[in-house]
Length: 245
Image 1: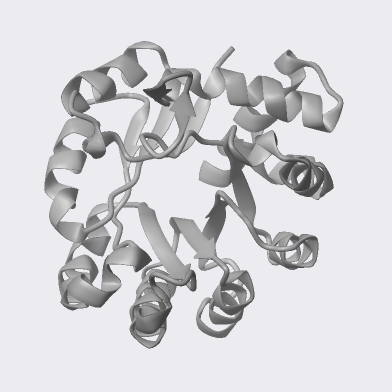
Image 2 (image 1 turned 90 degrees about the horizontal axis):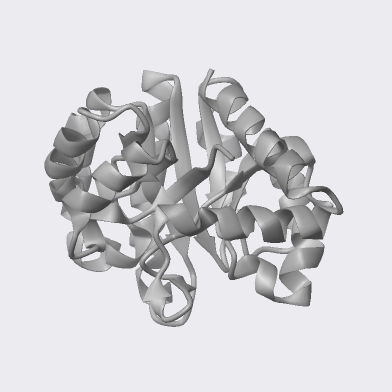
């Protein structure tokens, strides 16, 4: 099967360079998201020599309280990439105090992407999906960017609204480990589903999940959708091709 890991923090593994090479050798389309624009140069250098790994320019909402000034560097680097992530909002208890600053930064990200055109964003939306969707609607005219909600934890109603806006969803194994998560995934349009690991923040057995482990997620996704593993993998790959066309 051809596999897709549309959200993985490759640079947070101790064997970063080897893992990039492994993903490329196995032919796994891997989006190497970053948490700060200062990580962009190294990620881009490694990914640019591969066929299957792409680097994304990020400014993680959980880091905005301390690193919001890096939005200026992020804006300067945007023309170097088609992929953006990890970006978004996090309204969880640990990060809610920085919500005003997060909104300010995310608004600037959306405006810059809308102006540039053609960007694909991997979106973080913990306890904030409605606000993320509000900002997308406010700041990005239709057709100016594409959005993939990573590890979506909002309601089915939020997911339906996102799908109506043309958004995609990258699904990991942890999402599919609960009844709520499986119900959510079963409700999503099949033509908007991608897979991810979000490694190293998820596990495969006793070890952090790696892009090659996304095959297990494909199996779980196919089960949740009542389809064969092969058909599930085919659907995900087809969705990736449409997204990136």
